[in-house]
Length: 120
Image (cartoon, rainbow, N blue to C red; front, side):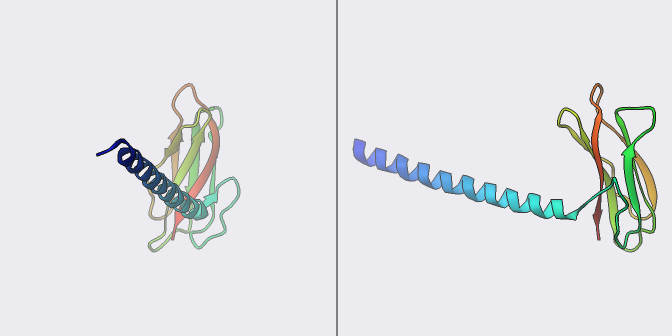
């Protein structure tokens, strides 16, 4: 192979690699958008067929969060989704039916935000 053909091959490989990265980013953005639309902010009651769901920070603590849902039936399921102050994200197990759960951010982080994720 000559130097010019090696250079052309590298340019082609670089260009194709860039296309793959762009496609992966676009796919990731689409998945994130779909996941975000399924989330219901838990600071207020969630108006869904799963019934009211609430979440918040446990009284007297900074690193524990709680979540609860009632009226959940059929194949609907939910979980507590907690954002912590240093960027960590914690989730409870998925629940089918009514329930309450608690999730802890790692020490020394605090709970920054809570929400209930619901899948119908």
